[in-house]
Length: 454
Image (cartoon, rainbow, N blue to C red; front, side):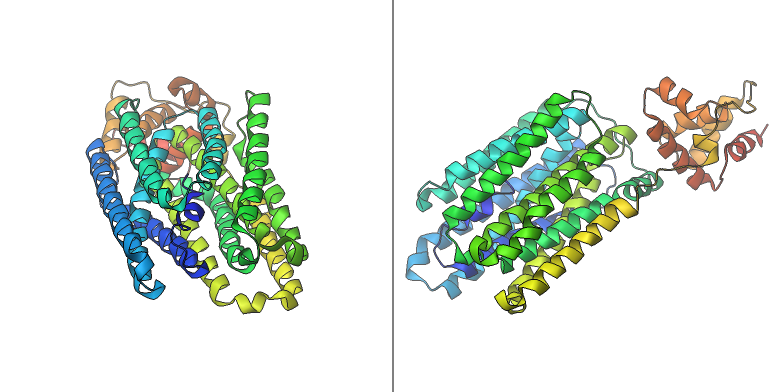
């Protein structure tokens, strides 16, 4: 429900477009602040005790937020919008803080799935969530807030059950590894941020107030279900399908076509363009989430920090887009429709440049990608001790120690991946981390380093 609930809940109090805007803005701000605070969390490794602390914090913030909103809205009929707006925003801000924590906990659990199962889980969950959201919009406004509270508390219960059955997952933190992961994903993150900005901007300038809420919801639900249904069919039709990076590149342009063309029919389509903009953004964020799951499983790096960084960036950029669109909407009136279309096309082309022109350059070096033959190895009994001494000196992770031992023996990347039951990309990630920590550049440098103390 997380991507769809604001429209429904924000209609509880009929204070018009201003309340809806500040409701969604404050919710995004709360989410962003929560993710940023998580990134500033002093401990790099997230333990189960930390997760329990986050769970308790989210529950406390949510209860406080719902209580505050309930109290404010119960007195709303006798108060002016100006007097109630700050209190409503305060309650929503608390919900945004709690909401981000819960989503982070759920995503951390999904990161234990296989890539295919994570993808299917995200797509099917979104299909069901859209239907639930659409059903909730028909409920009387008086029950929307209690329903939201029930959904949130049910989610907290699911989180508790999930982590009670969570399979063991060894996570390591290594700054070079973390940097390598970001270098692998930054283009996809940039693409999501571009679409987030466009979704926030279009939501304020596309004339949503000119059409009925019911029409907007109908179009949004229909388009969302068609696209998510296509993604589900594609995954089921190709059981071995796993190239999400390519899916990401294909899905974004297809989703973007709608809101690039709809501004040309502004007068007849009104705010329906907003549904297309949000769909493209949500779809890109879904696929990027699955990519993080793949990287996390492939490298044993903690997924929580990656998710926090990605979602904080996306929500912050969306918030900026909303504020720019809200306070500069006069620039995008009907008389400047051509300028609006040009601006959207330019932003879209920028996303294409980031995703296609600057390709995802994998970690390559002649030493790792091209070594099909083994190089000189050490056969003496002190080899393991010297590797262990180096591992202690440079603070290698457990997986880096294993890769170091095998690299020093002259094993190829393919051979190491088979021995450790990890992908070749994972071996390259760990090898690059070892090289950066020790300040060397080639396999022979590594072998020389191991052999110095003989």
